[in-house]
Amino acid sequence: MAIRKERESEKTENRNEGQVASRYSKYESIRLTYLTRARTAALLTIPTLVPPESNGMATKYPTPYQGIGARGTNNLASKLLLALLPPICPFF
Image 1 (cartoon, rainbow, N blue to C red):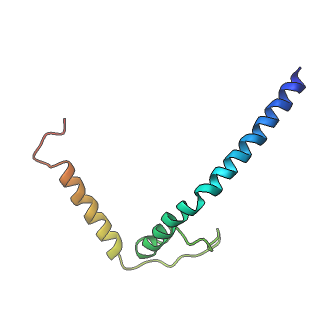
Image 2 (image 1 turned 90 degrees about the vertical axis):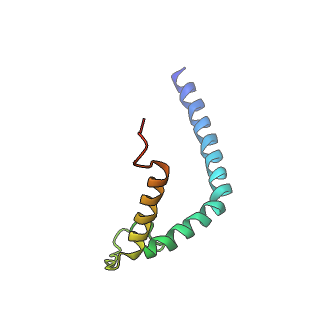
């Protein structure tokens, strides 16, 4: 009885793996569009955040000594926060 349950669970696992693989390949092209955009933005701000696909675990990244991209991102985030939650209005 236990062997039968194990075989049934193996069959459902194999079926689920096939469904997951087909779903992943279906949405991979959509995902690549956003990944390409994120990698381009990361090159200008923080390169280690979304590294290029060709980089591995042993890749050494240069230190970005210019912080203009990161400063711009923080500036926009703080302006958005002030617009959504103005300091004059109570929080709750």
